[in-house]
Amino acid sequence: MYHGCRALAALAPPSRLTASRALATTGAGVAAAPTAGAPQVFDRAAKRLQRDRASRHPSARAADYLKDEIAARLVDRILDVKNRYPVIVDVGSGAGHVVKHLDADITSKVVMCDMSRDLLYRDADLDGERDVEIERRVLDEETQLGGAFAPDSLDMVVSNLSMHWVNDLPGVLIQAHRCLKPDGVFIGAMLGGDSVFELRTSLQLAELEREGGVSPRVSPMAVSADMGGLLSRAGFTLTTVDVDEVVVDYPSAYELVDDLRAMGESNAVAQRRPALKRDTLAAAAAIYQAMHGNPDGNSVPATFQVIYLIGWKPSPTQPKPLARGSAQVNLKDIL
Image 1 (cartoon, helix red, strand yellow):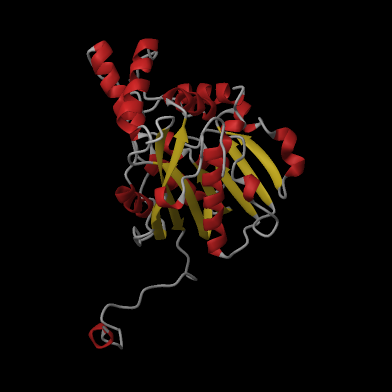
Image 2 (cartoon, one colour; image 1 turned 90 degrees about the horizontal axis):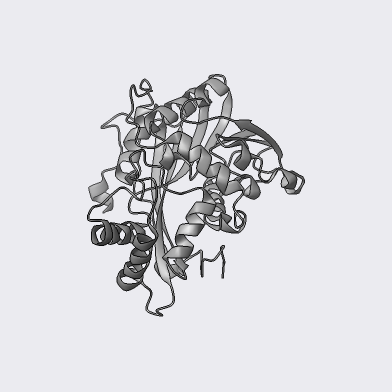
């Protein structure tokens, strides 16, 4: 069994883990312009400070279990590509969750990029244990990715559990597309959908009871059905979107909240309230246990929905669909 910081099981048994790969779309491969005046849903400066603090959290490395596991699944998708990429750029890399799973058969070098210098260099002392060369760059992927790398210069861009804090998601995808070489690939993983819905509903009910109103305590999330269109809008082709759902068991809501803080995943909504009152959190923990607690009565589940994105920069060498009506076999004859 895989154990996290204080999670009882960071990976659900097969009966509690669902994955679907039915969401697949093909884009036209024509990039749109970056989004002008994107709504500022998230406070990026606050998120940088949260990541800085997370790097110094006493349980920082022990709380890597979720991001490490999703990084491993992201690398599985890199292996599905069946090419070797000399340089991989990891945007929003954090302390380096993807690089832990890479070896010389996949790439020679990883460029890790994150807006938090403290988090980016947290595990620099472990570079000697990695199988590939590591370069670090401090940059904000939302505003600086396109200027940090020359157009048509990168083989692969990856992002592991970082893009759900970006205000201008189409703009980030457009910047990644611009930096990639023709036939280069973007592979990303982000939290979305109803992630930690148990915590969201418990906090809402607790605030209604104790404070007489509801405030945004959990980040709004992207929906998987929209992601194929966003990739196509950014200019990617041969796009694929699939979804995993990971359930993690915790002793109580308190451990979940503390682990989210250690991961750098605390609330960064721009219109958030400054602090969560102690009695509101206590009420939320009780509601969480009552509404969502496991049958054993000693743990609570937290659901993380992970959206995986794959998109290719157009190239003349890529396979093209045949002209409409050119098929030689009628499906009716086969079915």
